[in-house]
Length: 43
Image 1 (cartoon, rainbow, N blue to C red):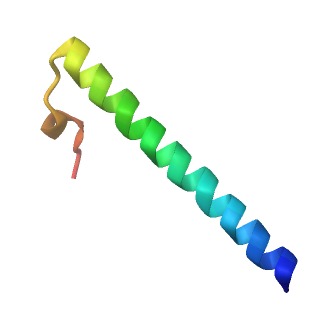
Image 2 (image 1 turned 30 degrees about the vertical axis):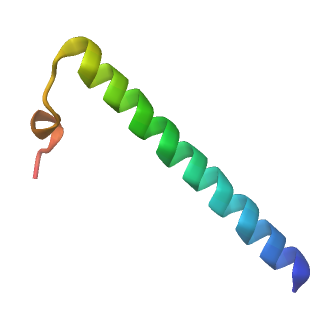
């Protein structure tokens, strides 16, 4: 069961990294283009 915990931790770390990277990229994109975040919401 130890391998499962390590796999879960690795997947969690990857998701955190991807989420942070997307947050930074979208923030930089909005900062450079001046597009407000609410225009990206289609709901």
